[in-house]
Length: 218
Image (cartoon, rainbow, N blue to C red):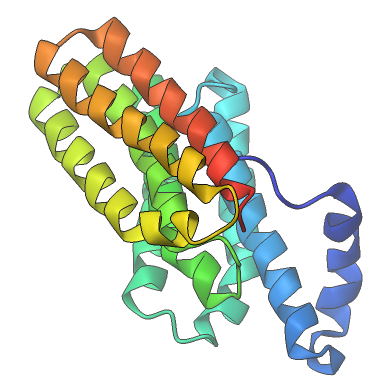
């Protein structure tokens, strides 16, 4: 998923943190969203293999620090089980040292974060975040030879898309975009059955590119 929060907003976070009680709700939501995005961006970089080795461990530490900064405000939004899911995923990411496991750990953080964006007022639906997470998960599954999990993740991706699709088709220009993601789902179902790692990874990468297009509708 594209990085939605620019440097200007991130730079404003220090000011927002020092005067949080004086901020209107919309401004507080924006600050919380930026903090959540900081966690997601670090975890996503690890999950996608953009950083590896020592830089990945440093990114994991930054993700944990960003979560500590975001958590108090998120907790006040009564996020419940979702909050605890992120706690657990961040703890695993922080503790792991295995490079292959770190990629999975980072992706699990992004998946756990998905419902919290909505709680913080994000316009992007949780199911769109889930498509992003599941696409990466499918690629990781097949690289690890976890074909049953890949099949389950494809089914979960299809369910998330079914829930999201009407919100896309109801918008101007949404029908062609929805057709594009329909094709992605069909391709993933087909190639996972072939057990071709190369073809599944290519289809999962296509899912990520199409998710970025769908994000523009929000």
